Amino acid sequence: MAKRFRRVLVKLSGEALAAHDGYWFDPKILAGFAHDIVSATAKGYEIAIVIGGGNIIRGARMSAAGWIDRATADAMGMLGTVMNSLAIENAINAAGVSARTMSAVSMPTICETYARQPALRYIEKGQTIVLAGGTGNPFFTTDTSAVLRAAELRCDAVLKATQVDGVYSADPKKDPSAIRFEQLTHDEAIAQDLKVMDTAAFALARENKLPIIVGSVHFPSSITAILEGTAPSTVVVP
Ligand code: UDP
Image: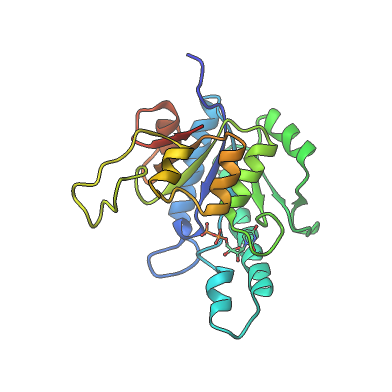
């Protein structure tokens, strides 16, 4: 059966990697995520990953305290995403699939600098690329990086991994009558003020007609299950 989405950019929040005691990384979570990537790759999906940095630093929050300017705090946030990317690269390699970190912020002694053409070649060779350093610019988020890279690497969709299994009409933790949308258009999400991604990221996805799949990756082989439609999700389409 032809795949609806074959080349997919998976966006994971940095907080998803954190241990219960607050330490940046939980190796079990990293291994579970890597296993998911390996099983999706074995099924023929081409996966690129953007990981946030929220388990380490979020620039807007840090600079709000007033002792550091936003651009510097964002630079630190971008460095956090590189650390997370290296942790994920390590876990995926250990699970048996070749992964390669490419950073928008050049640091050649640590990892390769992101460039579109080599990134496309690695994907075509079956490697998993982990796109670090956000967009390389302050005042952006890794949601925007995810949409930007998905558009330039000709991905069929962005899979945004969240705590919940889709987009709901209200917060399902607070409102038991909240319903999950199976499918929405970008315009419907805006009209109903449903927060799928931050505004800049969502606008870029809408402009580039890029589908966004929202789902939870908190169970084994969840990426494959979401992409194959056997696990719940919401798909936002043009
Ligand atoms: N960041 C940035 N430019 C980018 C992407 C990220 O400056 O293009 C910084 C920003 O400070 C952000 C932090 O990196 O708060 C971590 O990224 P994000 O908040 O998106 O992480 P997540 O919430 O997904 O864990």
